[in-house]
Image (cartoon, rainbow, N blue to C red; front, side, top):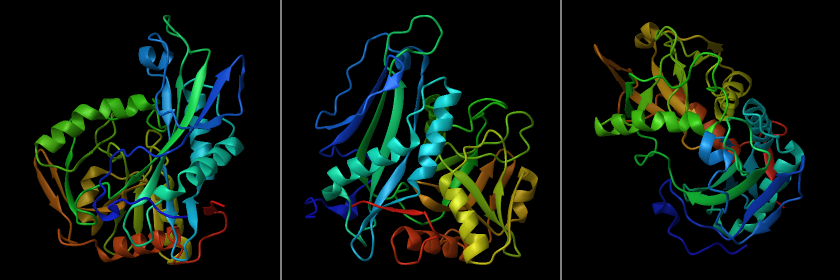
Length: 341
């Protein structure tokens, strides 16, 4: 497959139109088979459920060119399952999980020329999403839905790459207890926009959100889970019913415990204990792992011993191992790599 003539190394995390996208429609109680199309425009009623009551959810995953030249995706079955859960929570008809994986494979295959070459530092981002498409004026679920997948080649999520970032503790809440924080609903991200714009205006790369009920426990950022490393090398991730179950975080914890032989803990993390950690990072599909060097809050700041120059040693080992698996340099656990043929 001949690649497109793009400057792969200079790509940012933005949208580049590719050749094909997948579209399926739900009508009269069932999903159609879906098609690949050249048309990137979405035409819906002005009264569509998504426009009136934000009835939409999405996913994010990536396709990679491995060291031996294969095109692969990373654990798309978990994205399919998570989107199923998101749809159910929003009273939307889940797109069948097996069809989800087939559609991902089809749209990546159709846009394989946009999958960046191995070693370029870039990847093909895959965005499945679903929304209520029929008119809704009363507060109720839509009757018809559309499921789509588009792709776009992207560079690093944070412009500085793997350099440690400075974040701030947000005055806003990301999600309510018993709310929708544990699903990928579009409305969750809309709620975070003002907070992230404010953080950027004040010179911070991201927000740390605390639990809405007590504001004593760490939750996540607007788009990533936290990982912490204790001074004795234990990998710790925050646990909460309002945190999105990150596929990258779950993969990191497996890698830490089962491949690298580290001790891991998935538990409530109190803000007061952050000062005692040796390393901190943000993990998610977009950034994989981005190291945090400093957290600023109302009464002061926490500077991690790992510093502002590079990833801490444990975070770096986790990053190198996980990306090694994704890129085919290291053997993957069974079922983690989905090859596009």
